[in-house]
Length: 127
Image (cartoon, rainbow, N blue to C red; front, side, top):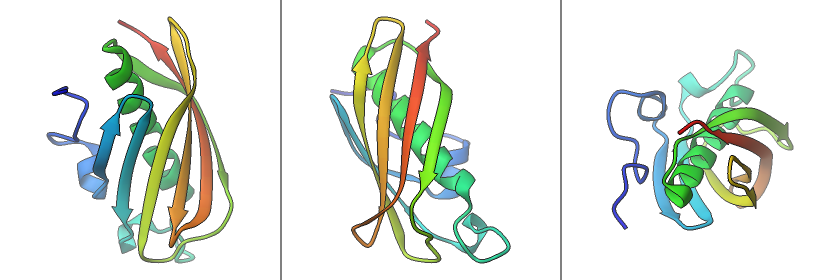
């Protein structure tokens, strides 16, 4: 299925960060980010906003890919479980609830196969 929500085309935050889509299909999205210095806060750890950004992006892409409508994030709750200083973060998002006007997705983020953050993202259909 070819869809405009299968990659991060153009001049946008995800391309700036180096966020890379690996796989998108019905009810499943996987992406990755190679950690660079500009992803870190002053103490040398990946900034919490990076995790929230990754989660909202792939949840949004998953919702839009699944429904064909236009979904945007309206709530993002991220728990940080372990810190990351280098390497690769792999993100996997799956839906929890698919409604007519909103979707709820959960994203799990891994560093070296260890769970480092979990997000729940609620998305609302605007078109």
